[in-house]
Image (cartoon, rainbow, N blue to C red):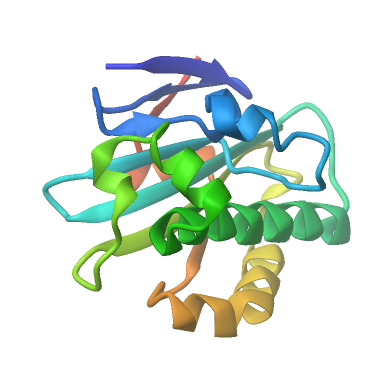
Length: 170
């Protein structure tokens, strides 16, 4: 199982059915083209679900709601665009398709997609997460509907652990 350490968290992903977009050779060539990727992608075979995960560490400092909302919004949209390019088999999408696990290469309507943003935070920042989650879902509403994604989940690290995401504290 691939294990990563980032933002004060340990992320443990399933063998063979996971990847980091930033490590894809085909994506490396897209760096500098105003794309922002989410950190981790894995396929949950039992739930027939594609999971996208972004982690951020704000446990030592505060954040501006608007700034964090924009970053998470851009990462969500760009990651979904990247996956859609592979499913549509565009020239660049076809290249990316060769770099990702088989479970991600073809999308059919039976697969679910879930988008998770996990913020390692302190008690001071905790109340700010709810308005950011609401704003993200408002701004993404139409796009999420097109891809049959019920909502974006934004959670603090403790809540993410409780709902069963594959993370632990370092």
